[in-house]
Image (cartoon, rainbow, N blue to C red; front, side, top):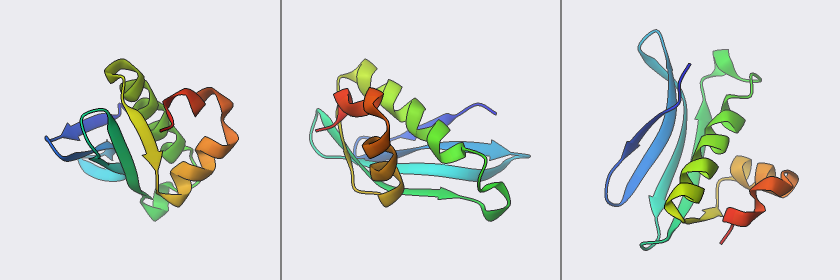
Amino acid sequence: MDVKQHDSETKGRFYLEHDGKEIAAMHYVYAGPKSMIIDHTEVAEAFEGRGLGKELLAVLVSFARKQQIKVIPLCPFAKAVFDKVAAYQDVLA
């Protein structure tokens, strides 16, 4: 499964689909031109425990690095992963 992105001028999400249905998503809002807030992560119950949330976060971190955007993880899941993964610290606001 490939992570997809839907982005507008103010907010967006990274998401995964299976059989044409969204099964996982990480939502964000922009907090100015160079920062974004991760405000929610969700994974369909049937797909929990497969690392999909971490996969979404890895893609978001890559996006943030390319765009030189700092990340504020208000979502409890994203915050917990940022606290554990030292390699992601460079994108934190």
